[in-house]
Amino acid sequence: METRTSDAVPAGRRSRAGAEAARYGVLRRLGAALKHDMVVNLQAIAMMAEVLNAKLERGTPAPAELQTSITKLNRLAREAVANCLKVASWIEPGEDEGVRLADGVDECLALLASNFNFRGFVVTKEVPDSAFQVSRVVLRNLLIASLITLTDAAAGPCEVHVKAEVVAGFAEISVRISPRQDEFEGLPYEASYRQLEWSDVQALALAESVELVRSHDQIVIRMPRAIATAPLQIAPI
Image (cartoon, rainbow, N blue to C red; front, side, top):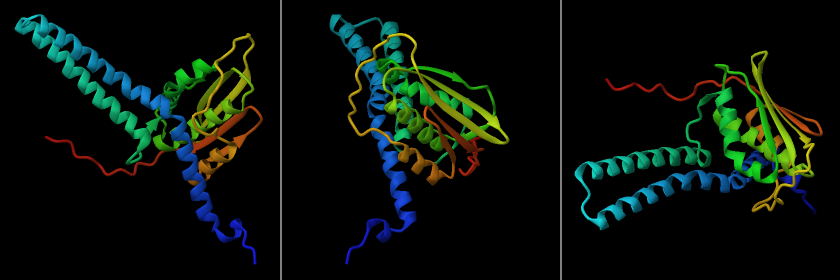
């Protein structure tokens, strides 16, 4: 007697598995960008250390000069640690938190900027300054997945327009693509991992109870206001 997979696996489990597969797919596609953001600060530390070592090899530098170099090295190290923690939050978010809508959109676009530039995608945004907050984790997953899905499906370099606004108590974010009017030829896309599909974005939206609408060249995400779930932190006196 044959048993179909769709009948054997509960729908809830299938939807969770689909969402996890989609999250992993998004993360794998962000691998190169995350690696770049992490390494760039560490390279600055290595360069500063080489400069300091060269000064020491030429002879003992003046105490003031040595102190200046050490201070710069310490500053770069602190910045590198802070940046590595930011990168790690994409991999393992930990406690979810609210983020201002404009700031959250900027985070996502900044991470994809280099990749889009190389492939010939010109990104414009229309995001008013607002105190409205959304879940940082949900916004990252859905906006990044939407951007990658649409650009994966594009026949060539495009203009990508991201618009975000607050409508009736919800954050409404639209991602639209249109062919470029010039003859720019972007670098051919060579995926180090699978392309993202519309079903991936749908699985993420379903898992987070987010409204999602797609037309041929546009995806619209409708997200609720973030609800604080993290415990209050008491500042030291």
